[in-house]
Amino acid sequence: MRVALVTGSSRGLGAVIAGRLAADGLAVAVNGLRPDAAGGVAAGIREAGGVAEAFPADVTDERQVADLVAAVAERLGPVEVLVLNATGPQPEGAIGDVGWEEHLAQLDFFVKSPVLLGRAVLDGMRARGTGRIVNVDSEIAHLPPPRRSAYATAKNAQIGLTTSWARELAPYGITVNTVAPGFIPVERHADVPTAEAEAYRATVPAGRLGSPEDIAHAVSFFASEAAGFITGQRLVVDGGRRLAG
Image (cartoon, rainbow, N blue to C red; front, top):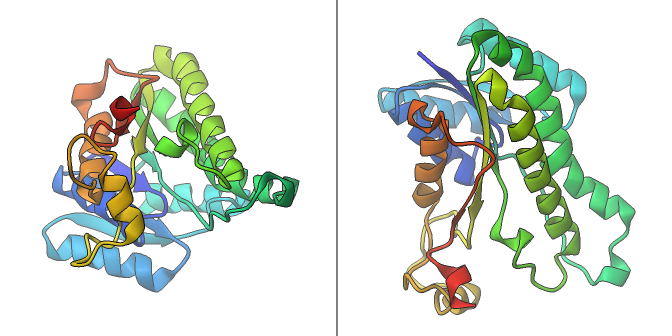
């Protein structure tokens, strides 16, 4: 059974991705900072007939990352699919109010943690001659609204990491791709949508908001054996919003 590690999967979008990969037949390592939340997601996957265990860890900490990958290998097997979904606070602010520290905080999640985790699983993937690394970026990287400069900068850096790793790792059978979600209400669609959601819906040719499942479908494909000849790609899942101009 192939093993997938999904960072930031103790809640929200990551939890849905973890559930989808488990339904695909992978053993899933559920990661998050809170042991109770990660354990709850893993238990839910097992109740649905899947294989999953919880692995709490801070993926921006080098020692914890090393321990995390070792623990997954010991309890489930070596990581063959790495989904880099972990995120954190995304503060908004005018350019003059957003300093280097705020930029570094965003880079910790979207560049440092992929670098730490990617390097931790790399030797095993190369030895096996196969591996899947899937980043989760954001449409904001190329459609940045005002006051989101630190987040947009970090997401663009994550895209650069994806393409450079894809080029270097392709000869080893390791693919590296990224999925870019549009606006996704993670807690499902409320009966009374927010003004932000309604405004976004008006810009989407598909005429609806995206769902966490839409993103999980894309991640599932990149993680699959069928995607073995696809690398360095960015799949924007936004219902065609970019086409609307």
